[in-house]
Image 1 (cartoon, helix red, strand yellow):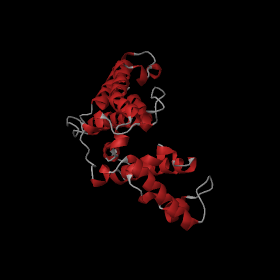
Image 2 (spheres, helix red, strand yellow; image 1 turned 30 degrees about the horizontal axis):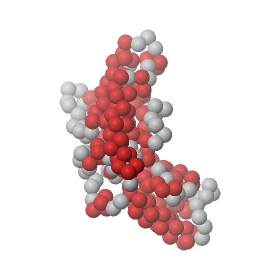
Image 3 (cartoon, one colour; image 1 turned 135 degrees about the horizontal axis):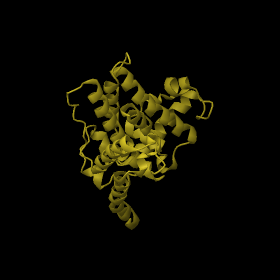
Amino acid sequence: MFSAFLKSLGSAYHPHAEAPKTATHSTFDRRTRTTSTASATAADTQSFSQVAVDTRKALDAGYRKLGKAADAGTTDQDWHGTIRIQKLDRRALYAITTNHGGLFSAAEVKAAQSEVAAIESRASHAANPRGTDAAAAAKATITVLDGAGPEEKASLEWAQKRAAAQVRYQALAKERHQGRAALSVETGDPVVNRFVKAWGELEKAQAYAEDPKSIRIGDMPSWSKAIALWTSLQEPHTKVLGRL
């Protein structure tokens, strides 16, 4: 049963059907302003729109060297050897993956998504090179997620992934180190906390179900409460934009 629960967590890094399509397009909101950001730097004070514009310029500079704009045939060598997408920081990559301002092409969005996934994969492998410490790999995933910019942290998808990563790490650490408490990886984020609670509800529901696979995380009470809370936290920002 426990391994089945971990398998459920393993699939949680993909967007859930319950998430609104606008989840990844949210910007600096009330929750972000009250949540500590370990990755905060001077660059975070730059507006996200300016980040997108600067990122557009950086890509175009790479295309001038490449001699063409990116398309479906753009190779990995093109992206990393000439365009150098790996040099973009996390906020820049997020601007591309969300197509902020409509400035980016489908090929660029796909490439940025692949680069973000590669960042997580490299961190996990570095923490667990021999494949013998899944807990260390899970902890590395948390570190990568916590390094996201404020706009990404304000998204529903980030909150879902961060909660799943937290629960997965705690479960793996408990399994690997019997009798020892896992390192504290809580964020203090109220939306993440509710998603974490939903995973606890899922584990209990699966333990008593005749068909554990029929129990879905999106059906847990705290899951819908988390989405409702996230939505309510977007309203002040949305109303302000409407008055501008």
